[in-house]
Image 1: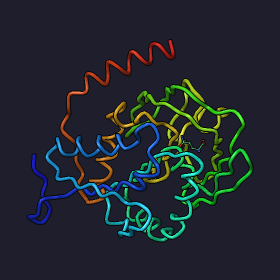
Image 2 (image 1 turned 60 degrees about the vertical axis):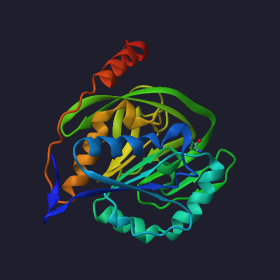
Image 3 (image 1 turned 90 degrees about the horizontal axis):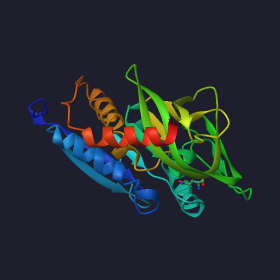
Image 4 (image 1 turned 90 degrees about the vertical axis):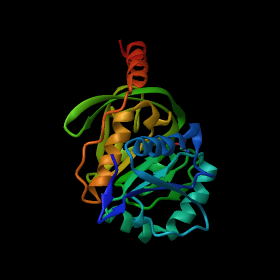
Length: 251
Ligand code: GLN
């Protein structure tokens, strides 16, 4: 299928934020999955790497992906993000799909306070605060997430010290069946706020859960007024692997 708008071939624009600083557990895999799955459906896809010193208009992107990082890298990114506050807010208002993992997720909130008490200011785009605990939350995660009205099992891997608390404007992305999630206390994982997905799940998340990748691509196309259902791809391998993991971790 070939996608056109006003006669021109439609391009899906993906921006990969801080690939050099935030890439724990190969978070960049999420970008590759989005790119490939859109490409396999006949879309033209471009991927731009955006880091300190590059200042493109973020609202021009259909999808922005930001990975996780350790506290030191987060400090550098936090400073740079402050310069992009309005630029990123414009993208949020324009409906850009934003995927932020772990360290990136924390920095979209009001602040991240490390376990040694250093407070790194975030952007306050997500209504969350994060405080580092002494004990790290590490391991495989199984969650249950509502995607377009249907419940799906999501599999991922987490490794964080930060405990994230949600304010009244943030809705959890999923319910935790196995693992810690946001804080290990309330059985919730991540945040969904409009087209923003913040989560602790590395893995990379979208390689393990193609349904979520497709949902994000559909949301990105919808922002271009293209209400579409993507062609089904053969995801048997992912389904079989996830079923095995579910059995091992939950049953
Ligand atoms: N430094 C943060 C924490 O440990 C984020 C870690 C990560 O991105 N995996 O909470």
